[in-house]
Length: 224
Image 1 (tube, rainbow, N blue to C red):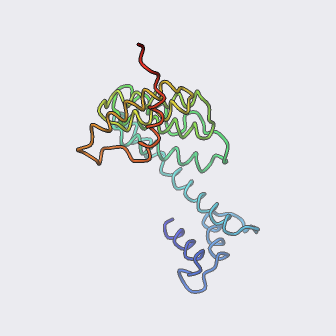
Image 2: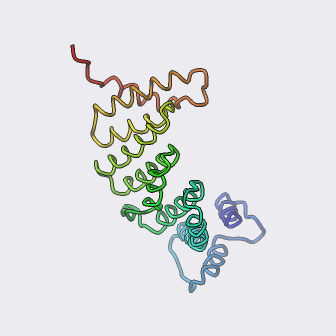
Image 3: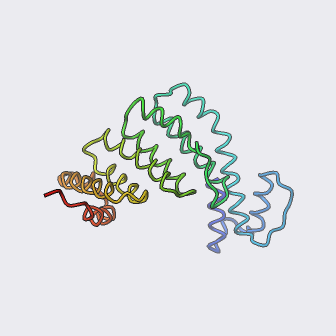
């Protein structure tokens, strides 16, 4: 697949990877690899990209059973489950038409949630939040954002000195229409970020800090 992409890119740049190569020849080769009957297309670049995605989908689908078996053999091994989850999510991203929602369990969410609950590891909770946000992007709703917020909040509780998790939770709370909670979480994230001044690699990116500052400013005044 990398060689195919390099061939496509060289043709798009007007510098064929080998003499005589053309987009039509690349398309014919891709159709042959996919065992499609020869088809004509009015948009050759788009058809080439679609065939490359289909090759990627088939490759991932072939790899999935072995990775699923590995995850089942070591159910507490987070890195294996995350690899399976990422693969499954990419398959759905390729196979699901733009604008259509993902299946509710895309990315092996149920298995990731079980591991997060049993291990209470911040990495597992944060990956669950990423999965829930990916699903929410396809079908946005306050409920979907709240689901991601719950996972980010659990990650923050499991790693109480890490500023990135309450920052992500603040953004999720904002998306869920919960301004007071977003302000509280933003304030917490900025305070933890300030504590990391001697370890700048663990501090928040400037863009995140810039989003959090106005959110924190919306915090309700303490009672007199």
